Image (cartoon, rainbow, N blue to C red; front, side):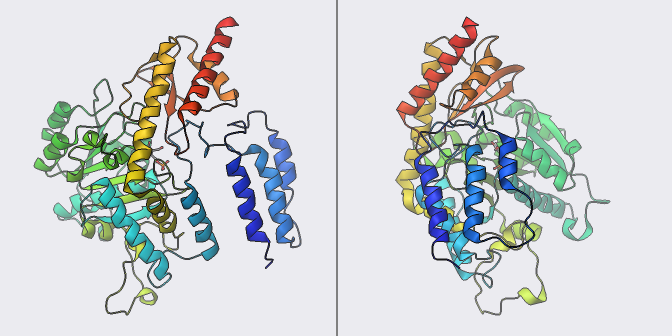
Length: 457
Ligand SMILES: Cc1ncc(COP(=O)(O)O)c(C=O)c1O
């Protein structure tokens, strides 16, 4: 092994990160054919590792997206914190298998501490179990696997042993604005998307609690209710206290998809939005969104550790830990077996920010989202949502699609598009620790310049 290789890789990463604010946010004019050519053919013989690294860097660097930078507003994307990125480099170098206490006590212990800190910050029950997964999709899937176990167990059916053939039908009530990963989780779990009965949402995008109550009273059998902290377009929150109480009164499992919105619970100024959320049975959230942990990072929390473990754990003779008091096995709470030691980066993010730093990150991004909305609406654009969190939906009359395309090509900033209530809109998410007022102002100026150009044509 050469002494220079890992420092060189870290140095290339450092340089990229240092230049994030100065490069075009999206590589719009990149020559993808040149990238393929530069990557070359599969060599017949080994290559010197240093040459391999340089070739990868030279080939891929021109098509990197500055999504970790301060003016990227697409898809609710957090740019990794310095401490979290550095810890993730260590995770790579340490190359620990985060499956169990036997494969890595370091991974098991760090994840255990970080999981307890997360519950504390998010106001979740101290006794809840948790799994470090790949993201919101992983979180929703694990939580709904635990839900499937619990509601069928209550109906006298052991789904882990017997499967779903002949099982009582599980029904799912979910708002019409749920994230598509809920549906994919239901597909993966064999419940199927036909299991969903959609509950209407309010104009802001929250579940209509009266309609939920009606649906609860007219749906038979094992039942799961999916709620949401942070509607994917508007950022709206479901009214958790009455919704969860109604679900529980009917004997249903209440799951909360809080991929980004659950972080409001860590911010005193926004915590009211999550009132009652801790009463739920399971919660999914992301680390790689608002906590600004590097990809990939998410968490599944469950108020019923036995259901969680029943859904996801397994054992084998060669995996048994003979210690009288074995450590918590991270692999018991996730769908993977051998896995990256994800706890290091999360621990580092939380340790470097502290409780106050997490609160400030969330509150600052919220204030910046409001600033973005004010700048655009002052210039005549239509902000169609109330900016309760970090999401801003903007319309430019009949010009929206063209303004969006031009803004994306500007290089100054990048944001995505969406369709909300039948209208094509610009969707802005502010979720990065580095974003400043000046970044928002420069981005709003770029969007407005794009609008003027479109109007002039
Ligand atoms: C509300 C919500 N749920 C789930 C997800 C899926 O998260 P991930 O992409 O991390 O799997 C997202 C993010 O895209 C989201 O916004």
